[in-house]
Image (cartoon, rainbow, N blue to C red; front, side):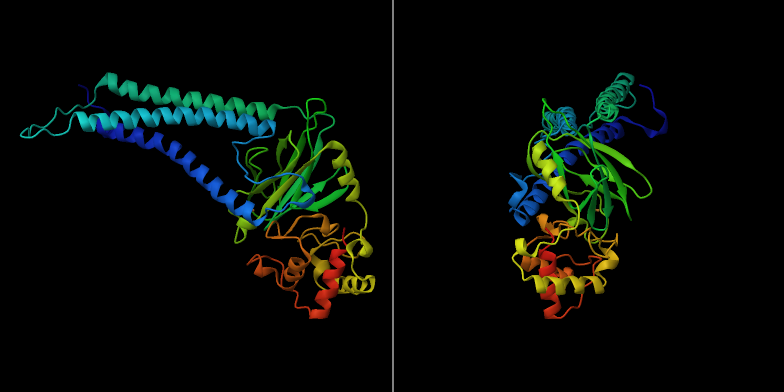
Length: 377
Ligand code: CUA
């Protein structure tokens, strides 16, 4: 029997060890529950998908379709297995002890008090250190593999800028700018084409997360973070901001539309130059022209960019080809004519606290402006 300095007696360390290990399991269960709740919310709000192909409605990290997400899932299974083993061992021994050494009728003896047994102290010091070492090495290996990957010649480069509360998406090599809907080419064994993302923030810390494609990466002001994705399945994947960033953090959603390579090229080509097509939109050209005048003389132009007009603001999303997007307000509502009109009238009814003001237009102006927006195809 040796006394251990610092009051580190056997009962404290037994309790301490169990307290340290169990939250890992609890965190996993909690994370699963959060993903399920978020998935239910996102998929019910945005179940329709239009031109985005198959909608993969559950943004689960356990259904990866991209190399980084696959490595992360493998690692998470290892961590979950080790954590589950610890949980079962500790709780099993605990319940066995409670049952085996329960008080017997008529037996009021105090059990032997054990302090400072060297073999026990060594065992519960070394075993947890080894477990943490294994977890550390496995994590470090995965991180290293993901970060060390060489950028291939044909990689697509995209810059993502986080704003309160929407995503600016720029394709510097293609001259395309959009918002909240990230279009990517699919990568196959025959034609590998990963996408490298440069993450920047305009204001506060956000976190870019598309669970099926890659892990979370923080989006930090005055800093550029890099990540990559390599989706191997086409369709629409859901993501969101994963770092609380203000009132409308919850409506800072993201859609990733993965195309066949040829479809991606034609999407990119369709996103260039001025666009205003009243005929295709089925609106009266005269009303749309009046709406354009409303747009150009109101505060819209201070915050939004629109190719072919005098609007070059950067506070709000670029509105060029607005009607090619499925949602408005970073996933706050589907991009329908009714929603668009209601949004311009007062965006706070969809997204309380949004930085865009209600435009205070009269009915005629609202009608004209909505008609003009509908031509942006
Ligand atoms: Cu951006 Cu939370």
